[in-house]
Amino acid sequence: MQRRFVRHYVLITVLLLIAGVTLWRYVELAHQGGKWITASGQRIVSIRGPIYDRDGSLLAVDTDLYDVSVWKPSVDLGRAEVHARLLSDALGADSDEILDKLVGDGPDFTYLVRRTSSNQAQDLERLIEDSGITGIRIDRISGRIYPERDLGAHLVGFVGLENKGLAGAEASFDQMLAADPATAESGFAYGNAVYLTMDVDLQYRLEQLAGEAMEDQVAESVVIVAMEAKTGNVLSYVSMPDYDPNEFLQADRSTWVDRIGIYAYEPGSVFKVFTMASVMALGGIDEKSSFVCNGSYTRVLPSGEEIVINCLGQHGEVDMTKILEYSCNAGAAYASDRVSSLDFYAKLREFGFGERSGADLAGESPGVLRSPASWSARSKPTIAIGQEVLVTALQMASAATVLANGGILLRPRTLAKVVDSKGQVINQAEPVAIRRVLDERTAQATLDAMEAAVLDTGTGRRARIDDLRLSVKTGTAQMIDPATRRYSTTDFIASTLALFPSENPEYILYVAIIKPKGASTYGGQIAAPLIKKAANIVADLYGVARSSSAVAEHDGRIAIQSLDVAVIGDVMPRLLGLPKRALTVLMERQDLSFEISGDGWVVHQEPEPGAPVSSGATIILRLE
Image (cartoon, rainbow, N blue to C red; front, side, top):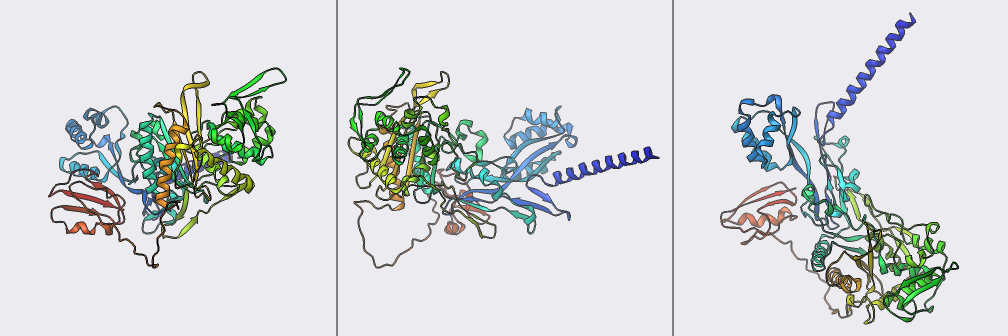
């Protein structure tokens, strides 16, 4: 009797397990490819939210893409070779590979191509219908296109095959961008729109500048960060070389590396800004403290071991200003002897070194700042000159906010706001003060000392702009050779940090040229001129007051320039990002044909920008 009940219980348990697995599989099948099927049978299409720059320029948007697959049991075996040739022509693929997928020994279901365009999918549909090809299925999926292509690629990022963020903002804000099927209306669910702090105009100009510098200096890569000093907003995020997120799988994997938020390296002498400020804040020195540089820092340990750190020259008597002006290794090292290792370490941590900056980025590196317990006798003076510590470019720019804000560290921001599908702002990013690091006097003294670097005797003199005050620090760092684990004699990082205008910093610029192989490897010679060009661009774009700026009087009335309209001449212009109302003038052209579909902004154009345009040509524009 008892055994019979036991058998019943076992049977019931097994049936419940089978039912549970079946239910789970049903849910799994119902939720795939961005589509859900409700209990009523209604198909829900999930549309990922767009990404914009701070002024609303479109950076990423969902579009219709298509997967093309084959089901072997339905293939016409007698005409498989003919169909394979036709499909290979339509898909631009090898006919033998197509034939193998149609009749080979592989699985019954396989993909011929994934994420193809709507135009190719339409052509393929016509081919299948006209030629009687069987066993081929075309499925719409949600895809992603990036109208600005490689512009700001490392900040914007990209999505994978399932339209899920894998890098950049796409990964950082994936939950905000992804649509919730539970909120669907009329079969469609929309994700939130994300606005970044990036300014595409500045980004474009600085990317052009970085590309030129990379070529001129025969460098492996170039980094430029531009930040608002009073808010921490990142205006430009340039990491070269870059890639086109529309075709990220075709790009060299080395171009995916984010050299701003993830790549960590020894900063070299630029770091002296923060080490000298730390020593002053701890009471080790003041503005009048001085040291003698006879060409090196020398200290003899009780054991008899001698520590020697060479300098670039014999600078004589140096105070804080001259240490930063000449980039004096000996002076910075001697200054570090005035404070304890534990206090020195703690103050550098307050600047944000050794921890993630919190800049709304996925996978951000914390860099490396080891605790004093693992330091050697030479670690403190070595760290004081920017060695034995690893930083990111974002950390360097972020730490500079301390100097621009009277000693308060700001959180760097890449997110401006989040807007839902109904246009309501649901997250407005505000400046975030993390902590006080310096008192106002120390912050100002450091800023003033940095201004001496642009004097004729300073290492940053090539960054000087005659009508704009800059506080600057240059650096040249030797890189570690992975093979020998020692400093390389050929690989360097040349960098420069600038805050301007010095009297009340509004902007922070940081540039780094990685592994330059040109005429020079010194930051003062190749990174400082780059800072000068970048600072002029920022100042002109945002109207930073200069000492030579003209003063104009007006009656208070402002004439707002009308919206630019699209104009097509002998060469096809770049129309991507233009609103539909800017295209209306094109309809008056009698010599050209236009195919315009969708509403919103131009996300696709044919011909490509720069292509010749002749009378009778057809212009295809798709808007979203």
